[in-house]
Length: 96
Image 1 (spheres, rainbow, N blue to C red):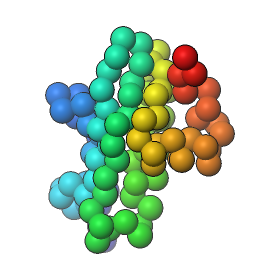
Image 2: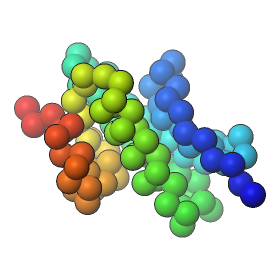
Image 3: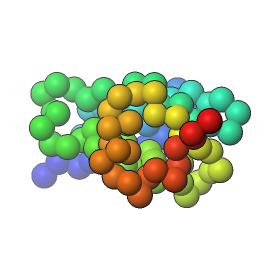
């Protein structure tokens, strides 16, 4: 059985998803005032079929929603697409 963990590495400005303690993917971001700009999401190509990128982005957006007053700038195309497909995250998007 594979164990999965997702965390925010604030020192690296990166959310990571790990399988059995091995990093399988990440979502990079930068902070700009009251905004969190997601710049890149990447998952190991051998592990892409398991929906890991979606789980990672969902965790990151839920974390932003519950632990900060930041708005999201989905510069990364995967994050933008995820938000388009999940309208309940639209409220987090910085429209300015």
